[in-house]
View 1 (spheres, helix red, strand yellow):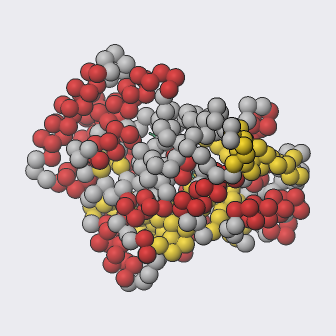
View 2: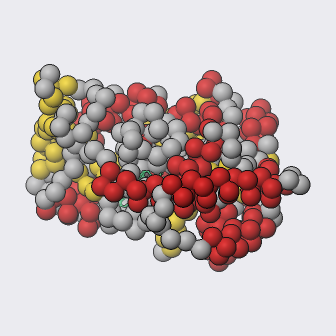
Length: 423
Ligand code: GDP
Ligand code: IMO
Ligand code: MG
């Protein structure tokens, strides 16, 4: 009786969607437990590339149930578009996609508040995806939020109006920062709410407890990454949910002792989108090459992702915070052609060299220190087994495994389902 977790170990966009899709054949239920449409999870197979934002990445498999847990925040308008985009796949949604009654709703005014707050911060902005994530989680913890189950109650419109009125007063505070036509946004919102109601709303914790008791296999799909966690990320440049393993417990209502494997997924280098410190960031041709070859553009916002070398100080921290039992390394193919590969093994600080993640990793407090490994020239994308890998790539994997003290069980060499090598 156990539930496995799949979590991003860096700043998001590690390739979670791809690997959840690959692993879904082994599971009965795929459950998202936090985040919302700030996520963009890309899946590629049969020549199609598809980006999911709120819907779990098991949706393309014929048998798996997909569950949106209580820890997720849902924008009905984005959700409706997501469903519409899946029309060519003839998915039997009411039998394949379930939504927790306790998941919170992103209202149009949450999105406006996100935009106004970011605009007011100027250069200090978080670089949020402007999907209303922060304001929605603020209302959740402030005990003002509206949940999916609430929209079935007779007084829900009244509650909506009350919250909206409060939000409009808050928007006054940001006077002039953004322009909006609320009635248009509300029309889209209420029509999307009607669509949302076509799906089953469930007591998801009960459903999961029953499934686990029946011996069903569950995979919890994380969104964002450990360094964007509200507590353990690079605060305040983080998202507003618990992206680490503990978030699966609170976001699904499962107990810690029901967790089996914790899959930690990372890129062979590092990326970050939005603001915030990034000690191994590259501002030279090497970074530009990673971005171009890796096609590092946000799946949700289209923004360029900042690129840099792998950071073992941050990775070790993420592995510990999450209790990772198996690693998955993505995008090694992007590093083909680099003469040498740099690996950050410590940070230089005023107190000397350190190997743990300190309170602040802003440039005024830490500088990345590197070792160098030999690069490889070969294109990895058509390789189907480890013994085809160039020696230098196998050496890179072996070095990371030793340093991270955790086995790397999957090596991904391209975006397609098929470009996945199990070790
Ligand atoms: P997620 O948010 O963690 O699901 O990741 P994203 O989908 O936002 O970003 C990962 C990007 O890398 C997507 O465009 C994937 O199609 C792509 N990708 C995933 N794995 C690999 C890989 O091994 N090699 C290459 N070149 N691209 C990959
Ligand atoms: P997936 O699941 C990468 C970043 C934003 C911003 C910060 C806060 O695809 O890995 P928010 O909108 O959450 O208030 O933004 O977090 N961010 C992500 N970066 N991948 C994501 O999701 C992200 N979700 C949020 O860029 O810096
Ligand atoms: Mg993404």
